[in-house]
Amino acid sequence: MRSAAVIGTGLIGTSVALALTGQGVTTYLQDRDPEAARTAAALGAGLAATPRAPVDLAVVAVPPAHTASVLKEYQDRTLARFFTDVASVKMRPLMDAASAGCDLTAYVGGHPMAGRELSGPLAARADLFQGRTWVLTPSAFSRAEALHHATELIELCGGRPVIMGHAEHDRAVALTSHAPHMVASLLAGRLLGAETAQLRLVGKGLRDATRIAAGDAGLWADIIGSNAGPVARVLAELAEELGTVVAALRELDDDSTACPRGKGAAELLAALARGEEGRLRIVDAERPADPARAAR
Image (tube, rainbow, N blue to C red; front, side, top):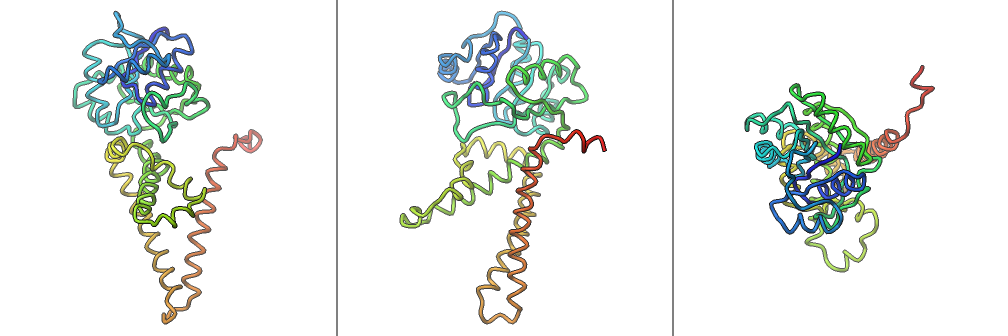
């Protein structure tokens, strides 16, 4: 890859551009807000200009609801030979792109599993994707050359490419990213009515649990809304479990209940134990595969 373009110079787009320019790829920056593109260029992310000839690959770095329309616009302008995106939802952009008449043969969806609670080009980092999973979702129409360019992009940014289906990806991020963000936001929202004396008791646990709630609300409304069905299913299951815990706590708090207090205590313990076990699964998944075990 000799040349590239990044459309959208927010946190992710500018981080991609910084990584590419650091690898010697001539990178052009496009943004609806010219000041954002100039800021990214001043950081060393590339050139705030339009290339004279089509670049090898363009990266669409805009919210999911706008991915297809931006893809269509820049395909019509022949900005690049091939296109990918970094939207954190994959089914809706693909369906919208098909409806808009985009050239799906030159397009491969993508989603780097990296980010920060900060936003904008000033929050960007060239090493943001180093060692991080980067999902690619080629469609049945994607040409092999388009997939090759998207894979090379990931390698240049230091990421680890993983191929997934569109619906499979959306179910996965609903569980691992979108529903957790919604829960963190709801939990942080409970602090709006807290007294100052109560907030002085906030420790690392609550800070960790609500850190991602600091993300841009407008952007996350777009992301979660674009993956509404899978997120709703995860939250519905969580709401059911939360209802069980609430009932157990009320039972433990009610001295006059006819039910044995042991039932409430058992349900509370079971919920906490499931959380402990689930957290360990994250740790296990991050461990390198054991070649000896895989051979058995």
